[in-house]
Image (cartoon, rainbow, N blue to C red; front, side):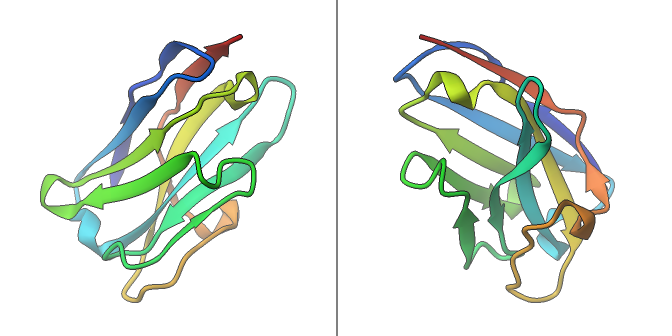
Length: 125
């Protein structure tokens, strides 16, 4: 499956944005999805994950209560709604996919075998 992330840009602290991850080549309904980010000078880290049908979701502690992951399998797209933005949310955001036939969540980067190109989110204070 090929993934294309979009929605990044320059935003104000306290603001909101929604990232999209559009899939092509395969039906996204057979994939568990995740969002990761790499902040300047840091390692890429887990942000959020959603199971193949969307029944289960998980978040990093740093974004819990502010970010919401969702998916629309009919549109072959996964979203990351980001609210109450903070400067420390500045990063390149990546979506990732792994084939799944259960409601399992995946937190580790090595669990994913398809990655989008990343979209840069910059949050100014």
